[in-house]
Image (cartoon, rainbow, N blue to C red):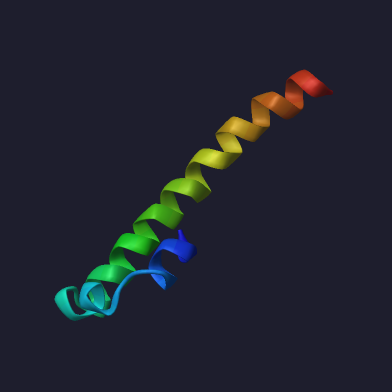
Amino acid sequence: MNLCIFRAPMSFFDANSSGRILNRVSTDQTALDLTIPYIIGPFAFVSI
């Protein structure tokens, strides 16, 4: 996710406000934070 932002052309940052970019990144990070435990939990349960 960070790699895509760092490699974005400057025109992307000119067209989008920093608030919109941060909102999108925080939404994606929240989705990861909420999804990963539900994926790893059953895997750990089966492994143990």
